[in-house]
Length: 103
Image 1 (tube, rainbow, N blue to C red):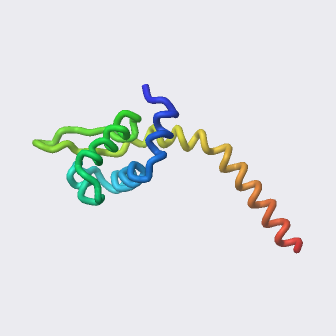
Image 2: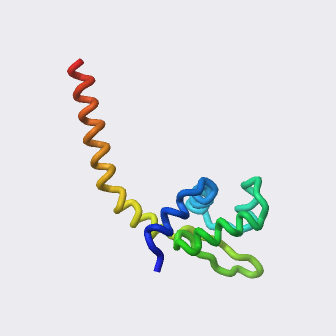
Image 3: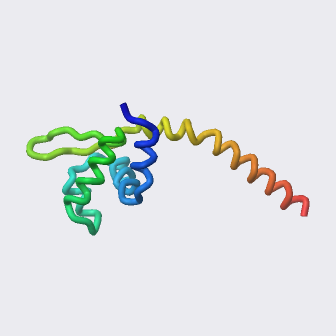
């Protein structure tokens, strides 16, 4: 079972966030993902392991390759958690717009 803390920890790193953005477009092999970064293959593999352990990606075998895919469920849970904060900021922005119009 993945915890919210593991998901947030995985999302805290910009390389891992970029990996998720790439995987949101289409599944990829680790090699294809690694080619998009100026990192060693082992570094990319470590980032993929963190994402996999957090439940944000999963992999499957396809011949001699491992294909990585995005798993959206943990992101939906984060979105649910963030939703009250979105309402908070929308209310604040609305207040600012009202003040600006009054000026």
